[in-house]
Amino acid sequence: MEKPVVDSTQTDELWTSVLSEIELQVSKPNFITWFKNSKLIENRDGVALIALPNNFAKEWVESKYHKLILGSLRSVNGSTKNIEYVVEGSLSQKVISRRRRNIVQSEPDEKQLAFQEMRVDPETNLNPKYSLDSFIVGGFNELAYTAAMAIVEDVGHKYNPLFIYGGVGLGKTHLIQGIGNEVRRLSNNEVGVKYVTSEKFTNDVIWAIRNRRVEDIKKNYRNVDVLIIDDIQFLGGKEMTQQEFFHTFNALHENNKQIIISSDRPPSSIATLEERLRSRFEGGMVADISFPEYESRLAIAKSKLQDRGIMLEDKILEIVAKKVQNNIREIEGILNKLVFHQITYKRPLDLITAEQIISEVTNKSITRATPNQIIKTVGNFFEISPNELVGRSRSKEYVKPRQIAMYLLRELLNMSYPDIASKVGKRDHTTAIYACKKVSREVSSDNDLSQKIIMIKDDVNKIG
Ligand code: ADP
Ligand code: MG
Image (cartoon, rainbow, N blue to C red; front, side, top):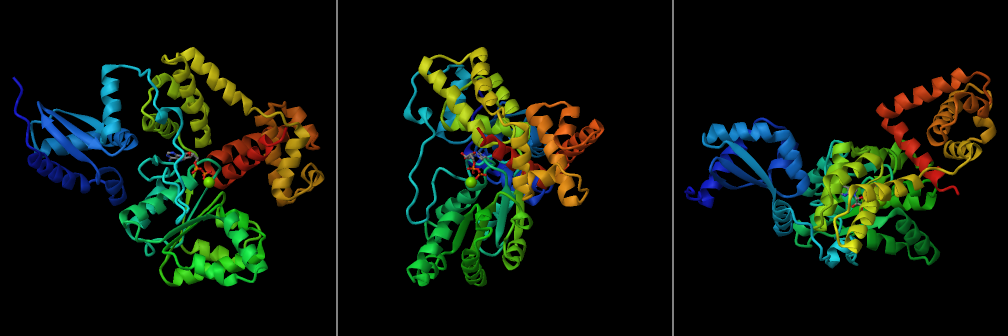
């Protein structure tokens, strides 16, 4: 016979006391991130059912805090033996019950066929698809996310400006637009938010100067509570625009208006950025997004599918997460292909077909560039000529790029060490071995270097 269900006020009370136990044992940001929106749904037959707001939170809490929660639950209520974790919300609940029944769907709906392209809000320029709810947090972006949450809770006062940097496709736009959307939602659209790319800002400035309407810039950009500028690195070298931005920045900052900036590199690495802007950027919070670890890549893949209410075998997702390492957009691209295949053939995708599709996509990114093109690309990146790059100078500004070039020749073309050495004008192949080992060691600990290498690889991929 089933025991009576505990009524919800009782579970709420129980959970409140469990949370206050937990709060003492984890850091404040972690508590807010992982427990604030958790709920105890029921506690019966020795099993506590805990709901988390999204799949990632569920998996994170389950893997990192299970022991702590169980211990705290038991100390408050001796009868709890085990915990089940679920995702809150109807769609997710549906996915869970589907999973329980082990049924793979055959009738696709529109949502499954494409990630919804929602309409951009004309007032704020924000795309509602970028929400903080759907933003997966892991070690690689935890700092940036925590700063984002702090801003949502205290707009304009906490970290101002917030400067977020990281490589292509790692979630900068998603996160900064997510802040904007959340601030709007919490304030019932009362707080004025404006999102622009730095290119749009530049165009507005140029237009205003040309048409003698500089006042318009003031009107449009200084009247907001939150200004979000994406990809600020493109302001490099644009003096007039930088000047205008500096004034806009100051006007907003003085009035405690929030400024949020993204860039593909830290302020110190944006060439030809005015010193006064650089020091402004560094005066707030600078947070990086690095490359997601395997677990985060897997969590992202899972959550993207869950958003669409579709299932793929876990094994398939594991392969995707293993193969695509430094670009979340690419993870989405592969998932699109896999889902499309499954929906078209109206049956669960098998492992072999999935592997074929995945390697087709990932092999495409194998470079067709020649050694000389790679050397030239590295030279361009560091603003030195190919001759200087393969020359004899031991000066620091050449040595590092030269080592990076050797590393990339090895990594992208799998060239032999003697070939690499002769390509860069060295006689001794141990120089090449040394350079490749050194760079590959540094890449794993030096975030700035690994960002640079990703950017160079991106440039190389654009060849051919
Ligand atoms: P960036 O601006 O850094 O180039 P984007 O913000 O455009 O990258 O992200 C690329 C894609 O990956 C977007 O579709 C975004 O929704 C997704 N994405 C990036 N990071 C995350 C994350 N942490 N959780 C969920 N989706 C993410
Ligand atoms: Mg972006």
